[in-house]
Length: 328
Image (cartoon, rainbow, N blue to C red):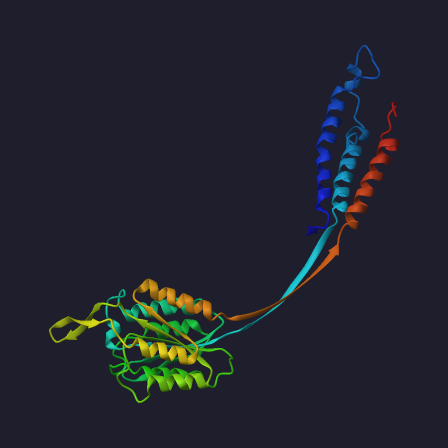
């Protein structure tokens, strides 16, 4: 409920002095008939008039209260809205080569990428999201789906060694494009995450970018890894040994892929910057929501006005007829 003229509600403040004057007047009233002894009157039965003595005043106060509400014009609002959503197709292409085990991100590049990507997926409930992994080869771990619980479970099961080692960036991107090229959704995006340079595969990264551009697919490329050296664990017959790898890779190719497709390139050197990269992509690729809101207001002052009139008339009838006194 809302009020068209809320200023009239200040009339309710008049009730405080009115009630005070009534109480003060009742307490200060002296007897109009003096007698020597009232002991006989104490045992006299009380009539219904005794219990109704204050009712006229109460009805008058109620009339002021209700009249204030009526003058303020209370209104009832009926609102409803129509909402439609249009999700975005997002294919995530994740590098799972051996260098993704480097520990410059915690606990390593691959696990950090999986964790942040899972958070990104949870924040986009209306989108179709899928997963392609690549190393020396590429395959689809999960097709486009809105069942994000299943997708995240499949995401967490990704690990190094599922396919031959290497970095086939062009093949991974082409696989992601192929999985979404026939989708009727207007907005299509590939998030390509890698820490290396293309060194195998039958498809050149720039060729895959041109294919993505043909199908109207934007590519957001993320280069992950510190700019210095990082340790990579290697399993040997005598246990885990560590090798050192450089944080330098072919950023030029990733920038070119992003520029060709109308996307953007980001560099993530630690967990915090990787999370901020996904947050930036989340801002750039918002789900479209159309909302139409309707509002209808109905005047509701009449019940208060009639109730105030009834209280006023009832108080007058009681005061001057049923409860009339000699002084009246």
